Structure formats: structure tokens, C-alpha cells
Image 1 (cartoon, helix red, strand yellow):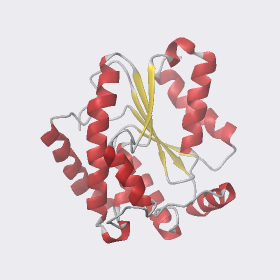
Image 2 (image 1 turned 135 degrees about the horizontal axis):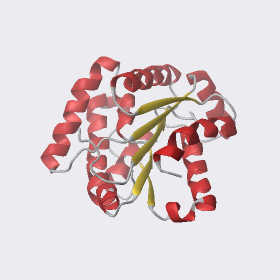
Image 3 (image 1 turned 90 degrees about the vertical axis):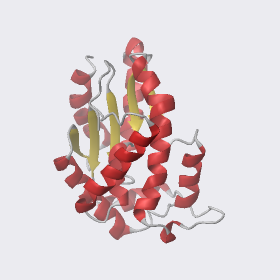
Image 4 (image 1 turned 45 degrees about the vertical axis):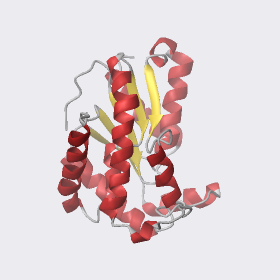
Length: 223
């Protein structure tokens, strides 16, 4: 991994499905648009997997069980993660690094720590991170580490309640409660092992959680 050499910051919003990270991401975008217009114009808001590339479309087809030839349960988790790496390499090359080069900040809904979905335990972090680093190296794209990874922490049971309340179509990951419990533990372990992670209690009201989000991001972006 490479420390961010640019003036612009990289910020990732992370957590298990229905942790509230996407809502916090959107609140941050709306606040900047409303109250910090000049700063808002210098921020590139994005998402992973990115569906501008065919690899992102394939990932969602697998997650929603609509891929024409493959089923996610037949793929080794590392094989599935390789698709995320391919998408991330494209994303960094085509969107993230060009934005940083223009002195933009990059704010992403998900990013490098989403590898927590592809490991059975934290013992797999190192080999999977090694695979990702080699993929970036082979593509001659620097794996620039985020300046902040905000991990919203809620129980898998609370996340399931939120998902059911929304009435949305559940993907392969969201349907499995035990899997979500394991991913949550992976995120907490990841935060202890890798730099620039901030674990935020996401169980409160969105306004309360957003106050904690701002405590981290406001000084970072000099607002």
C-alpha cells in the first residue's frame, strides 16, 4: 500500500450492509452541497464496486443471483474478491487518481476494507491484501491508502431489522445473518490492524451518528 502523496484526501465509508454508512455518506454530501459550496466542488463522490466498468456489473449480477453462468456460492471468496480488485484497479486508474491529481478530495461509499466480506477470519487479511497489492503492481497502478476509513458498527441483528424494514431485495451477502456477524467482526479486527480506521457506533439515530462523523471529517477537510 502507498501513503497518499496528494493534497486531496481519500475517505471511505464502510460497514456491514444496513450499518448506515450509505446514509452517512449521503448526509455528508448534502451538508457540503448546502453549506460548503466551494469545498463541494472540489470533491469527487463515488462508489465501489463501480458500475461504470463491466467488472462492477458482473459483481452485482453475482450478488443478486442473475449471472448467466456463475453462482456466487460456487466461487472461492478470494476468487470473488479478485473481481473487486479488478474493479478497484480500474476505479483508481480512471477516477480516483485523476481526481487527486486535480487536488480534489475523493469520498467513496465502500473501498479497500470491503475485503472484510471476502475472508473467513482476520487471519486471511494478510494473504488477501498481498493478492490485491500484486494485482495493483501488475497493473502499474499505485494502491493509495485512504486517509480515513469510517467503519459504522452495528450488530448483525439490528442491520437485518433495517433491511427488512426497507423491503429491499436482499443480495447473497445480506441474506445470511451468520455471515454478516462474521463480517462485522472482521471489520472490527481490520480497524485494529490497518491505519486510518475510525470505528463509529452506528446504532443511534442518524443525526447522532452524523455528529460523530463530522467530528472526524470537519478538521480533516479544514472546514
